[in-house]
Image (cartoon, rainbow, N blue to C red; front, side, top):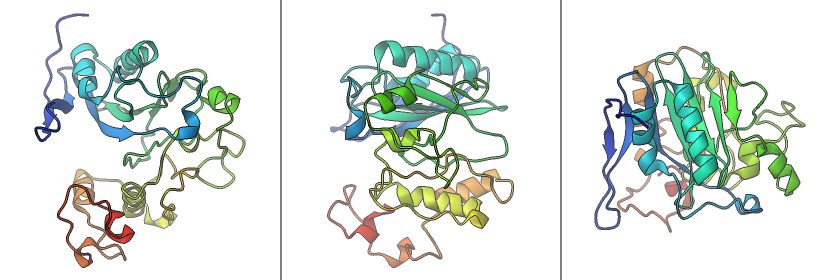
Length: 273
């Protein structure tokens, strides 16, 4: 709608000839807005009802970072813009996404729940979140616009079509409310459940968060967790290098994986690939 704001961009390089696109995966613009768009998610079959399956055409990760950094000055502007696009044009490429939108003062998680549905949740200043290609929103209060924004019928749609799962990630918390990630998501795959478990236990070991079972999509990890101590940038980088050292899943003890497609390996070897 105007001349593009100046922005930096870190491209996601993809191998030819299978993928020919090179899109901006993460960047910041001249107003301090930061966007990261590489976290793909999928909705479960139960939620693909009432026209809620994804579209072949629509907005997806390849364009989001460039579009938001070019247009928006603040996280609020970026959320409203992306929300309007999702509601009008839909989510494309037959997959969903969790997008990180933030600035030096605030961080939001923007998540899609099918064709035209979305939710943005503000990360509390004293908490952290681990995202690993799972849907993450176990609870949302859409009347609290300071912390949540999104499509009005998210919970009602799940209830109306009979696929709603109730209760938060912690037993007894939000017991009568719709758990959005458990209702809509295809969660806890062998590639994801271990990564989330490891992150929560590295930064909040006192919580003793148990690993969720492979394929148990009706249960979720807590969305936001209070760390045992303030998380430094160095600790985040160490987590990115982590290979489950000191656990029974230590990758240095497993046979080396040499293929980009590890299907067919024993589950213990592939769980944390």
